[in-house]
Amino acid sequence: MSISARRLRPAAAALAFILLAAAGSTGGAGTADARQDPVRLHLIWTNDVHGHIAPEPARFMNPSFPPPLGGGASLATYLAGIREEAAAAGEAVLVVDVGDFFQGTPVGSKTRGDAVMAYFEQLRYDVIVPGNHDFDLGRDNTERLANGTRIPFVCANLRDAEDGEIVDWCVPTLMLERAGLKIGVIGIITTGTEHMSFPANIEGLIFDPMVPAIETWRDRLRADGADLVFLLIHEGLPFDPQEGWRRIVGAGGEAETGQAESQGGTYGTVTGGATNLMEIVNAVEGIDVAVGGHTHRGYEQPWIDPMTHTLCFESFGNGSSVGHAILEIDPATGTLLGYDTPHDRGVLITLFEDELWPDPAMRRVLQPYLAKTDAEMGKIVGSAAVNLTRGDPGASLMGNLVTDAMREYFDADFSFQNLGGLRADVPAGNITARDVFSVLPFGNELVVVKMPGSLIRTLVERKVAGDSGGICVSGLRMRYNKQRPDGDRVCELEIAGAPLDPERTYRVVTTTFLMEGNSGLDFLTTVPAGDIELTQITIDASFEQYLRRHSPVRPRVDDRWVEDNAAAQAPYLARTPAAD
Image (cartoon, rainbow, N blue to C red; front, side, top):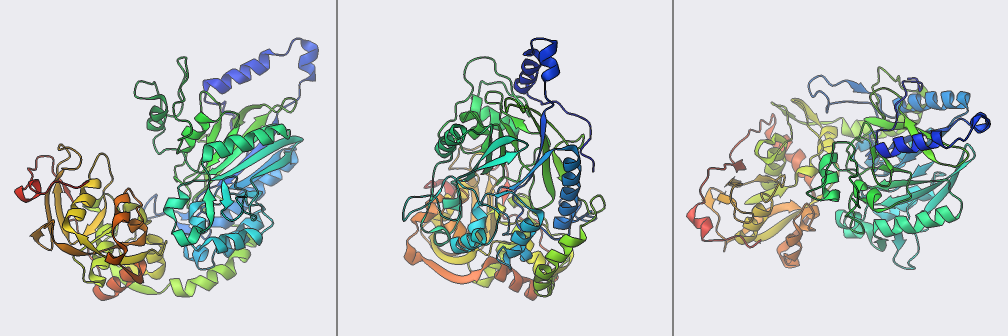
């Protein structure tokens, strides 16, 4: 694929103004003749690879007839072509990853990240920023990976609790030289890591607030002579840019999908409490380019903040694509002038095997790691008579199946699992251990909890409040009305075929991840430790056992989770108001 595809001017009015101002500042013919061509820097990035470095079908595009993706070997082909063309044109290349790089596939997890690090080494990455899932096998493993590579791990808000200093296996910033320019790089990990990781995995680590850390290290880089400052951050752009911008400008602000224009005054209202990349770059001036991750939200064109003019990039993750933007920089002033895209659709390149034939050298690098996991992961553990698809709780065949397996394993009354913990669909036919891993890659441990009916009511009410996405359940029959007020929307609620008894203690199965208060269930942290039984059984183990017992499985949509905005509340629930 050629880098000489048609030129796209920056989409934001702010950057267009910069271009015009730069053009209009030349005083006469002599000055114009002295003008230098812009430096072109090829910024290549990945985010949320999650171990997807092997060839695999693109089921997210077409579950029945998925086109093949070439994985890491196709990226090697693309990157080699870009480097060759850039070298011939006298242009620079910078290759970065912003976290969650290995956990999520058999070859990533079973090799404890070694396969992905070998892949990064072969591709000659310049920078790695750790993500929250990079601690899933414990901080010692993350530190081992960082110390075992030539590629610098960069993170400015991750400190060791023992001495209060940046962890010794990371550097807070880098100053990179490209085409005679100094590029200061700040790495940042989401502070949500301390809530999304098991405490033992991040013991002794401090995750500093993101905005103050960025401001501190930005100033140091500028003082050290940085021409440009790049923010590489494991925090992402919002799924809906229009809604994301509305959060910043307030309900009365004007917003357009992709970009927004100032009508005067100060737009940024989210500062120290900024929680996503759009909010962060609006709150922090002096960042030229930001590459984000974590939310898996690909942007074909960058988000450009209309006030700070920061260009923000992110790909969809899971190894399906790579990001590529050609930044144009004034060599005299170090000013970012604009960007080109590698094709007319934008900055994301889908790694289709047919378009980017896999590089043989990369195949040889990956082959030993793939062979190590293939035999085990190729074993057939069951079969499905229907496509096992995800979706909302009322129509999630995969969610129904997984929670049924959890409940059956422990002969419990009720089980629940968050939607976000189900990571893939599986087509009808034989189901392998690899398929199970693709659905449930995080190895969360199951717990059996003694839970009063009143707390179950609170849980369900929390998951139907506002615009909540809900939760996957088994052993429960529920009907709710979203026209009713939050906290009192549930109209029917039965467990084991009988109306919920708020005074009864039920036997409930869920994951340690949810009992630690994740997915908006913070109140579960108040359950006494004596009421929680750690089983040492992982969710994927219960799922495999269920498949062996019941294949071919044929889950169906039933009445376990029903929205009915005409429903009247049953008297037994009216007498038991939610304790939310």
